[in-house]
Length: 105
Image 1 (cartoon, rainbow, N blue to C red):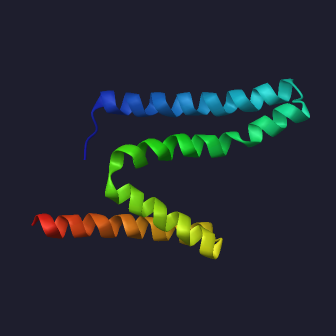
Image 2 (cartoon, rainbow, N blue to C red; image 1 turned 120 degrees about the horizontal axis):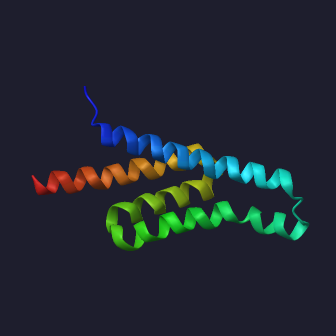
C-alpha cells in the first residue's frame, strides 16, 4: 500500500495542529490561575461541544442518526452505563442501515 505525499503531509499537519492546540492549552493554564467562575464555565465546554457535533447530524441525517440517538439516550436513562448506551445507539443505527439496504435491494 502506498500513500500519496500530499495525504501524508496533510495528516502530519493535522497532527501538529492538534498537538499545538492541546499543548497551548496546557501552557496557558500553567501561566495563569483561572478564577472559580472561569473553572465553572470551562466545565460546560465538553457538553456544549458534544451537542454542537450531534445536533447537525440529527437535523440533516434522517432516520438512522435519529434512531441511534434515541436508542443511546433511552439506554443511558435506563442503565446509566455509557459504554452500553454507545453500543445500543450504534447497533440501532446499524440496524436501520441494514433494513434500508435490504429494502433497496
